[in-house]
Length: 605
Ligand code: ADP
Ligand code: MG
Image 1 (tube, helix red, strand yellow):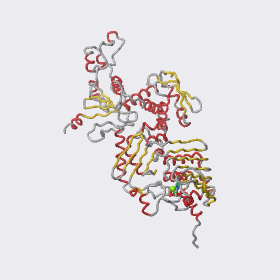
Image 2 (tube, protein in one colour):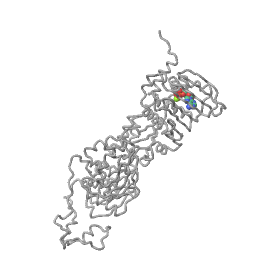
Image 3 (cartoon, helix red, strand yellow):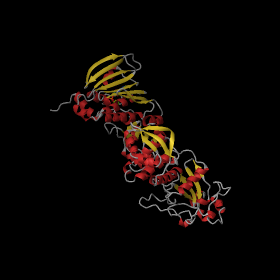
Image 4 (cartoon, helix red, strand yellow):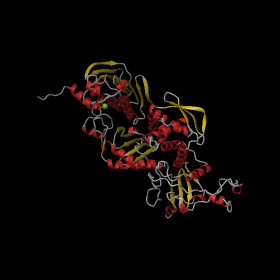
């Protein structure tokens, strides 16, 4: 009763595993091209790969016999014996991709080896070779897959819309392109060029695929050990996405998915990420091929690592270090023992008002008490000396410093007002002595806090003047972004932004608030949308807070150059005039204090 299945049926069954959709066929063809040593690959698609899916490479090519053999099941040039499986460095090795594709489509292959004068053309339809003949063709291989699943209607029906299938095709291409930056790749769909990726280094390749915007947000990850080498990039925590689509793991130049290693990265940037945000990463593992098993998944998308726990730890440490090096995690570990306690975000506790620094009885209209500017006071003068000038004046209480015990306890502020030496670190931090030690202020977060409170103030008490642009800029947006932005245009106008719909998903920025530093319109909108998206869910409930937060982040995000002394001092002053100076609007600390004891301890040795 038992019979061997005819080849074409066996192939069709196997095809079910290997080729589920156009994207899986593309993956196999691309991998073959890379395995063949191609440095230039062209992908031509029609109707999201349904009617045509063609890959042209300049790799090693095949002779006539191999061109025919390649379509047999278990035909492979890549392994000869079982041992070879443990040292796989090629993508393919099962020898079933071409056989499977040819079982469910009409395939034409043209191939020529560099050293041969003429090439070979083979035409196969549903596993039947219908023609084989010599042809003149370029060195390398061109495989055209037409009418995929023409003989498997059930499969064909399962295909999604063209846009979904095309998205999958692009994703497959990206996975290959991201681990072979030296290979030039072009992708065309229905006659238009989707991608044109020249040979490049890794960072350039990532930018070419993901867009220019990503470049400044990438931080290098690198660690080399005897077990594994880990290289790549992680996006800074401010550059997070709403999906995990921009997360890539590669091992020995092969894309794979791993919830386990993903966890290592999430753990490493845990406190830095907003809720439901996905960090962006491109991580490349290199290790001896016998320490991994790639043969556990038909599409080879999962990989088993022999020493996965150790690698987990290394990945975690490498990402921490990378973020730390770029001062994204404090490089002095503040959450270790003995560090001063900075309050965590107090979500439901109402903000306490700082004590007023004014004399309530002071009346500026009483002639004899009116403050007159005193000559010779420059902003550089220390407050202590400055105060002395007022000694004996009846209204000197106006400038009284607050007795320390009356300071709100959440403010880790010493008597910084009396010691005004300020210095800056790489334009990122402002250092100033305080009674208990050295205070380090995160400039960006401090700016966010200051701007946040001002924007919030202006949203609730609109009275903003607009500075009209001389050259209004238009910005065109994807439809989703446009809709989101449109929903806040009214609020924006209340605080002085003159942004108007311009038709066709385009807005025009006519003016910005006079009292804030003007920003490049495109950048303003990009940053704004970015934060709005992050907060889209909560937008209705706490509209003003969210908007103020978005704006504050957008406005503070642009500053890069070091401040001058006055600006730095103003920043410190403005920060401490805020209701909650110690926390950024997102509840992260704006400042840290290294205590005297800690500093002393460092000099004990
Ligand atoms: P595998 O890649 O697992 O070996 P495939 O069915 O994908 O199996 O390919 C079968 C064989 O055909 C390969 O081993 C290789 O020798 C040859 N081949 C396939 N595609 C190409 C190509 N683009 N250039 C050169 N040789 C190729
Ligand atoms: Mg293959």
